Image 1 (cartoon, rainbow, N blue to C red):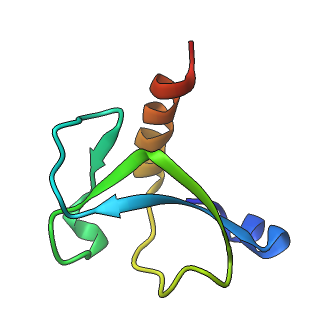
Image 2 (cartoon, rainbow, N blue to C red):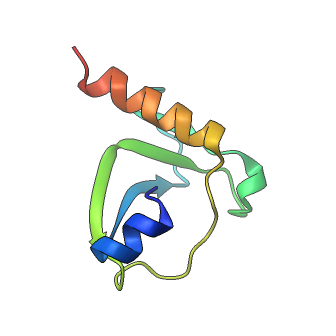
Length: 83
């Protein structure tokens, strides 16, 4: 989820879990990903599962989030953590 410049300078990436298992929890905990990301199957991002990982840990990049998708993720995070 983090910008390439952040990743390069910090040596870390900010990531969120993705699942192909449909969950009961809807937005803001889960957000269905658009098929245009090319994941090959219906998938959801688990907005509440944010991780900071070493840039060496993730495998192959599977897609790039659009600004619109990132906006929805941030909106979900705001609903979870903002008072």
